[in-house]
Amino acid sequence: MTQPPCSGKKANHRVETKSLTIRGCCPHDLSHHHRQDVINAPRFLQVNFINKMHIRSNHNDMYPQRRTIFSPQVSFTFSSGRVLSKTDNPCNGLILTISAAIIVLTSTLSPCAERAHSTRHYNVLFIISDDLTANALSCYGNNTCRTPNIDSLANRGVRFTKAYCQGTYCGPSRASFMSGFYPHATGVLGYKSPREQIGDLPTWSEHFKNHGYYAARVSKIFHMGVPGGIEDGGDGADDARSWTERFNSQGPEWRAPGDGETLENNPDGKKPAVGGNTFVVVEADGDDLVHSDGKTAAKAVEILSHPDRKKQPFWLGVGFVRPHVPFVAPRKYYEPFLPYSTMALPERLENDWMDIPKAGINYKTSVNMKMDLRRQKKAIGGYYASVSYMDAQVGKVLKALDDSGLRDQTIVIFTSDHGYHLGEHDFWAKVSLRDESAGVPLIVSVPGQEPAICNSLVELLDLYPTIANLCGLEIPTHVQGKDITKLLTSPNETVRKAAFSVAPMRKGFLLREDRWSYIQYGEDASGGIELFDTEGDPKQFHNLADAPEHLATVQRFQQDLKSKLIEIRDNALPK
Image (cartoon, rainbow, N blue to C red):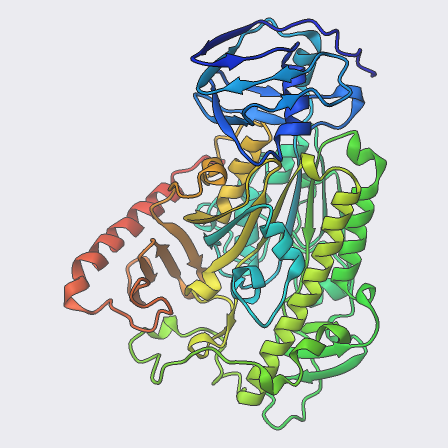
């Protein structure tokens, strides 16, 4: 239904301030001018709004940028001394001169402001890679593997350096951040949907769908087998209720035409390229669209370019499967990493496994994979080529968002389901609870937020409540993550004392504090303990769990873990 234009009726503003000049009509103007002139201002002055409310604009039927003012006194920003009247708003503009102010917007809003309050929200574009270590991204310091498109997002968002997954392989991690529950709450420790456990409780995207959003996914958001599920083109462990529409991206994976080599358990080189969860490198013939991720990007571009995206807010999940094995990408993405002999292996320590329990030795190692140095270096080159290919697809999606004119109304998130070892400690792949495997890249870009680096501890589980809050939706009471909204404007704040992650196949638990990394195998610690001082030993070479001087620290963590598991199991799941 077409809404009537703004009448221009003035809202009633009560102002308590030492120095404030405000001229204009209504909160409709406030958000419109804020969107057009303030959001990119180089200098900001903070104003606190007392009451919780949402200020939005649907001026000229444009899809608006929505600003949320959170109670009790969450900061809102305007530029000081700027003329805010250079738009085609039929109402008069605003001039703000602020030194210190508190503005209370009373309920006598104009009809256009009341209408804006009840509709329209930020869009959400959630981009997730598969098996991606932050250490492979140039915005996280990698000087060999260049990722200009992900870097560009980091340059306009908040890049988190201490983000952790809740499960160190695909199934439990994805079920966790989509359902809002820790793996040991639902018991989803493998590769299945959490729907049976959560009943009618809404998943992250379903919550947005229930509030009027178009919710869609392209490819892998919940678990899908790679490469098998991608070859088949099926839905995997997806949850149909979570989506308005869903799309799969079938691809040839290790069968792609090109030059392939199996690196794992192939010491004599006689084994051809094979499928499964195996280290295989394929320098593939053809272009980006031959493969799953190229098709995923193309479908995401199509969705973002559709005229309906300007008519209804959306939650769009874009799941890329690279750099998950097999390491397959078009040939051009391999060129920067040739010859493979130039690839650098990580620093290693002789007898590195001597002071850790058996459960702490990862399930894939240079030893049990029978990979010599040549194959290890080729594995790194193949991984980097897969990352570069994935980054190029991210660039296509971000360009489509820009071309649609919706970038300033869309929250963009980039992350991975967990990290990945590339030879650290002679470990490869996922599952381990060391930082390379349990840590994830995380970038959150919110319109109008200044770019920043945040070193505070966060979890993937925090995305559900945070993005709901930013979009003006109620945070469901069942979610176990924390709202980290304040870290987006105040990155030096702290929300968590510790991040929590699990490796179910090893019965492993991680409590990661700023200084300490505590890993315990078995709820009774029967499988052993690891304790690393990451300030003095950032690469986690020296296990201090048996050192007498750290006994009190170990005992504290044992109690903290017991308390954490009790907290996780005391939840809102259907009984």
